[in-house]
Image (tube, helix red, strand yellow):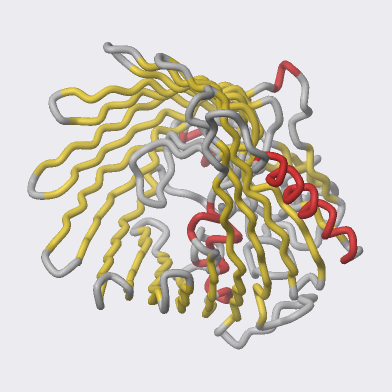
Length: 439
């Protein structure tokens, strides 16, 4: 993420008139009310939700130029209403998750449909159409074959972990056979990652004085449709999966009129194909995981375009073990091996950070439950030995009641250099708090 210098606002539909925020919520409520009407032989719908406050403040004492709230990086109230309806005598079901929120940093209201889909269920297959969240792979906060959009800004701000994933507007077909099962996804509309944005974060910009910038997302046309396939099966107690994807990078690449002294910068999303596999099995007293993916950078296979990622192999191995007294520890080693590294070095502009041929992470997760699992203490750390930077996020949470959750955590960034993945975030270390009331 060190090359990212601009964040288009694409996920949330911003609504500046606070009265207009009522309409999406009323529409959702009305739809759920229709689902609750009695039907012959049908079970009643499920309806639940929560009210939540979530705040994050920068603890480094450094002022961000142009920021509206300075130390306050996140300040919001959020409400969710979720309804599902799966009649026992029908093959069609529905699930909807809608949210409204108030953002104190932007002084704005907004609404978002987190998920909203229809399922058609059969014995040997099922179909899901609509906005849905898909999670693939075996990595813990390390994503190789999970090529679907992420919200890294939410993750770095201390939002609940579920907000790291976005819903995609897609059609999904699941097939179940005695030999192998498969999951095939068609995505007609491209959604990029949400990366740390201007106004909330410090980050490295190789061309800070260039203001002539634009974002070019893939158009919604048939030729830009994304395809993803997962085939999986259990064999000798191991969960095996194979993956394929054809689409685009979720992080933007840079296109400049002149990389040495540019006057205009365009952020584009190059074509990408991914082929991989994963393995997970109980062994050595715990769970052993491994995953591999080859990233084929279709628009820069010769490695000579400095603004586009080179093709590379990504891999990880992990081990997790549960101990007595509700203690769990997990370790992972992750690597990226760049192809065409000689061409990469020869064409790299002076303003860019030079990556090493092998980029690595070592992660540690520690989770401890107390008081009948009502108190949770957790720690997750990223460390990169080649970039010499790290990210540490400890958190403590407590279920005060069955419906009330409180959480307190810290996101700590540090690094030797200011232009590495986590080193560029060192001024953004923050303390966050969360209160959620479910119903």
